[in-house]
Length: 155
Image 1 (cartoon, rainbow, N blue to C red):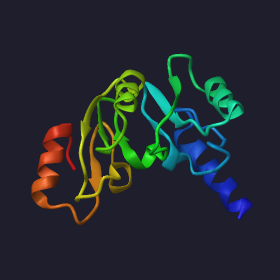
Image 2 (tube, rainbow, N blue to C red):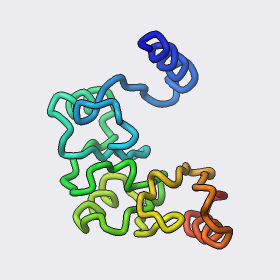
Image 3 (cartoon, rainbow, N blue to C red):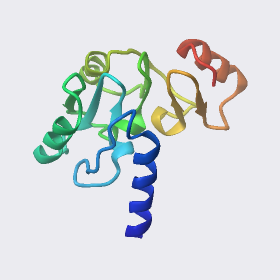
Image 4 (cartoon, one colour):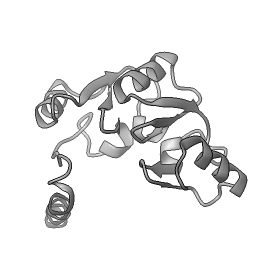
């Protein structure tokens, strides 16, 4: 399994490493990085469980203009509760107001409290960037059109 992981990392580094930093690390002493973080070109949000060493590794690996911030939030799987691009973030309806303010400040986005297909885990039920995105197949055509209009991208 280790060889497969190394092959995957090499593949990713080869394809995108010259465009964006590829960082080898962990968050909250796990490899569940996508589930626990939310990020865009402006910053990265990590849960409070992120260790000091992990936080420092991120800061050392990213350009200075990328903000790295711990978030004290009951719903700590930030990647499951936040879906974002460089302009907008869909967020779980029950995220703390302080967390929403950090999302706006650190990621530099406009936020929308919503659900995707009646599910509050917006980061699990959709993914999008500045050009387009995908949503869970059970999302209705009406909701898909509404989200596309809201985010100003094709879904």
